[in-house]
Amino acid sequence: MGYKVAVVGATGNVGRAMLEILEERKFPVSEVVALASERSVGREVSFGDKILKCQDLAKYDFKGVDIVLSSPGAKVSAAHSPRAAAAGAVVIDNTSYFRMEPDVPLVVPEVNPEAIAGYTKRGIIANPNCSTIQMVVALKPLHTLGTIKRVVVSTYQSVSGAGKDAMDELFEQTRGIFVNDSPTPSKFPKQIAFNVIPQIDVFMEDGSTKEEWKMVVETRKILDPNIQVNATCVRVPVFVSHSESINVEFERPVSVAAARAALSRAPGVIVLDVHEPGGYATPVECTGEDATYVSRLRKDPTVENGLSFWCVSDNLRKGAALNAVQIAEVLIRDYLKK
Image (cartoon, rainbow, N blue to C red):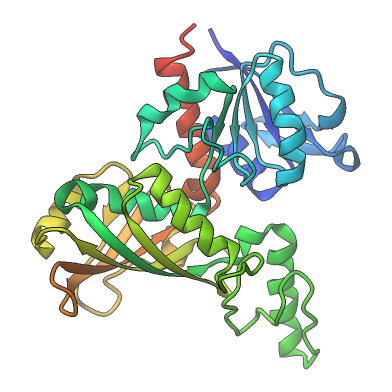
């Protein structure tokens, strides 16, 4: 017996990926509904060999829907995710709106699947930020091995994390530069083509950006409230897949060999670490893949118990849509059995 699933934000990058992954993983659906804003009503999206026409989210009655995979803007989610939950659906919300609510579980299935049980409080499960997801997938086996005290991370985040308009801006600016057109920033505060921008989201009072704050507080909520995190988040001219340079300090000694073995056994992680030119993961190879790739694993000699590594993952898949579908899979396996 299948589940009725509604995908909110079905015309966006993440919504389309959710539909694709539901089909790829043969999620047991009885019906899939595509929902979007009023201006997208009637637009067609693919679900396997079927074509779905988008319905108006604002007018949709969620009665009878089992699971909602939601990826609109945060303000839209604030209005409609509680409405869907009140109608009896379990909402897996990909926006930032509910993540730090104490009665809403924030879940990465490879890290804290037990937290899904808390969905009964409000009928909502939050999907973490894309940059946080890939980092905690890699940190979890290391934390089990040596107890992490401190993490310093610098991200190299693709433009798809800012939506389709951002991808279009990178494409148009890149093309324009080759024909001597001056790039005009719109989605980003500065030119993104052939450039890097050390700002993602708005600035906060302490000088950090909101994206950096998300990585700090979400890591503590998902993995361990005692871990100290310092993040610098940078937008780079890459279309899909985020990269991260991560430095970890442990409470006790952890060898490179032990870390490599733990990561190699960890669910959702692939270690690609050959000490030769090209023996590491980059966004090009990781786009379209489900795993979080770990490379450049090495000792950090500047602290007593430190390791450094490079981490790459497809932000539209594991960083968003895939993680949401994996949550739904655990949900139906352990809590919503029909």
